[in-house]
Length: 141
Picture: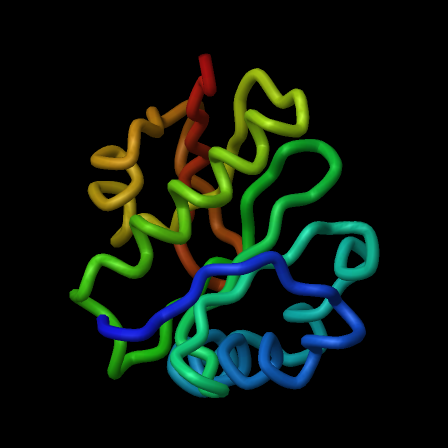
């Protein structure tokens, strides 16, 4: 999409933008319980945003353990490659900050997307937030 910017986000300063994307995708679209959407990792994780002007289109975070999570792209911006751009940006950030690999809990329907980005499935599927998931790992070397 034209005029988009991928950037690091600060939890407190960018909370309204992060919340706008995550509430639209997880709480409203996927019916995730708001009580489990926000957790103790928020303040210590590095957050990321894709914005177009002042409008947030996508967000994600990486925790201190190297777990990528809360990755969400608003409905109107899907299918444009923003998810892959965001994931690439996060993996580059992780590599630059000394991680040798990253992992995530992919919603099962998105497993193919993450495979294209170099992730491989590990272990058995499981349920998280009432949604089927699979752990996926990507080496960064």
